[in-house]
Length: 289
Image (cartoon, rainbow, N blue to C red):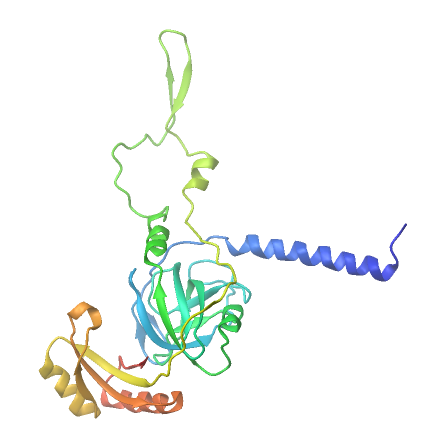
């Protein structure tokens, strides 16, 4: 029995929507590459990307917006529904867990873009992942922990990375013929499509799931800098009205920290960060305690 016109229209729209979703999913993986990238300039200064497979940091998160080109820094098609995010310096792609310190919710996302462009924020999270975290329009204090093993596997899967070859196959194919039975076999030449697919960059799927962790009461500090010597730290503290403390950043290489705070609200921390720049502390940033 034929469907009424209204039901035919609904069925058509459903099929069209499914086709569109499938097309967007396939486009998301187009031209993805492993990158660290050159230094880039944000609103407050410069950021210097580098590989770090054991990242653990706290700061303020914001909701990501679509890049102007629609393509992320590692070549993905940006999607508001994907479990992805942007980081200022970490290699891309990388996988991290993000915990909302206000409510304890945890999501896993794949970092694939650069940002945010201000030193007062450390990560931008896709709208869908942000909704699962319970984030609103205001910056949210979060803890970021990198999945070291999976992020290393992504880096190791880079088909363009330099690899030590024990024996290099010839560029052109060579036909070898057996002297006994006349069997012929091609050696070398271009890789097959199956070989090319096996050399593609690992791009883990990120299911839209949320875990319940521990919420915390937080405060904010302005980290004016980390230094190897106490005397240098003391000069910066005197110039910028900060305090010198001994910390463990950078694995002990830069043990002397200069900070301002603590502050109880993001607005107070933002004002203190703005005040730190005129004193010459260009690398100042907000950290969550």
